[in-house]
Length: 215
Image (tube, rainbow, N blue to C red; front, side, top):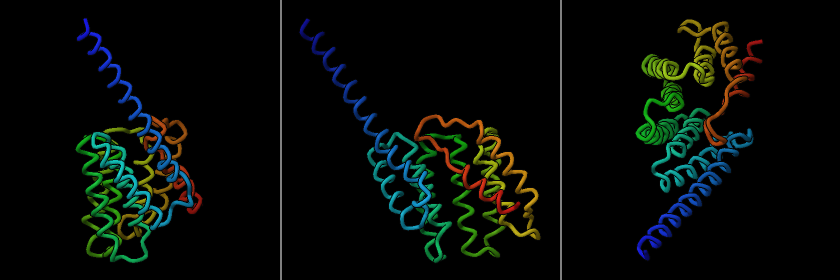
């Protein structure tokens, strides 16, 4: 009887500890995801700082894909915003390592493919003439893959539109076609419901901003 009671107490203790750890994880993730919802965080240095925090969370929560995902998101966005092109590849490499770790935990994930497409895009800016075709095709293929996984993800259409918006017309870009993609993205955003408060939900304001530039 004592062994049974001990086993029950042990199971209850383990369950309580697990719930406390889960609540702590949600809280720390929530605080850092909220920083990414604040436009003042979007400068290269601040994004690096937040990315480093997500890496530390990922080191402690090795079975969770979101910390790796957000670390990669921070690094690739910092890469895209860098004025010094010499820093871009190193940041893209850090983003690639983290998103690969996220993918190992959560394969066939459209959100992860969106970040992988951004990593490819970031590498183009270092030398567009020599890198544009290779990484442009890689980015487009990743977005097609993401779309096949989830046709309701608004970030897929946003990033497809972004590619059309910034690519010169002689290389296949088109503001007209970009606008169509942004319109679909915004329609999808209007009905999109994140899986949780810390699940990916970025992009709507950015889509509206690019649309405004076309108008």
